[in-house]
Image (cartoon, rainbow, N blue to C red; front, side, top):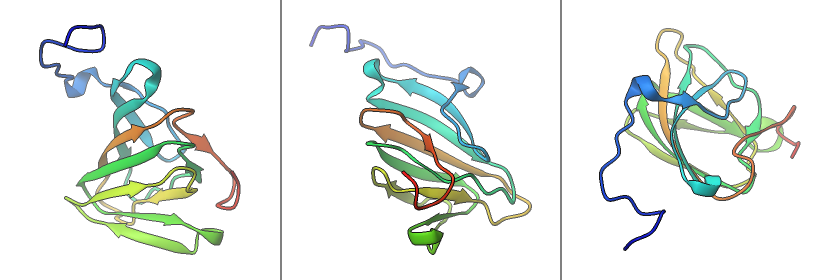
Length: 133
């Protein structure tokens, strides 16, 4: 197919070429790809050892992730009482508007996640509590 949305070559973004992503306090996001209209955003998330992010959600977007290194706990639900543990090599999905925070329980190793955000609207919405939209 011919058109501005279709490339005729493979594109590579080197680690040194990543751009600042849409972040939350406690998380560093580095963007590799962002489609026209920001419908798809591919980024790397880094969570320092022992860090806990602020509460946030991804608006109307689905977040699909792959844990490249470390281990992570995602806290969510009423008063943050629910949680799921994600290990190296695991994939995960966070549905739209689900308020959560990212926790790195390891005091010695950072967490590295590859994220794919799909949908429209703001990619990150930071909130004060798990009950807030």
